[in-house]
Length: 127
Image (cartoon, rainbow, N blue to C red; front, side):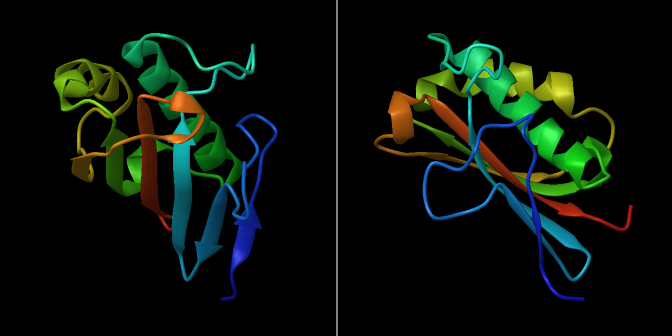
């Protein structure tokens, strides 16, 4: 199986030379999603709202690929302040329930558009 670009207008367009996601060999690789609110095009002020928007955007991409959160096998969360870990963890738990994926969470100095959180994932297209 070759690679296939996954793109949806229900999630923010890539802001650089990359795509929202690529499907290859039964696996979906979703690029990091900032917490952009798709209704306003803006990034909310609070980290909880940003995390929620990031995960909604990820959901739209997963849906475009014909899967949902149950197919996610690994996520990576990028935070500009590790003090926000608990808040983001609570929001994350609203989206992932039951068999949770593997996960990493790392602190970064900065994110594009002054975001506070960005989340990426890898999912199994065969589930």
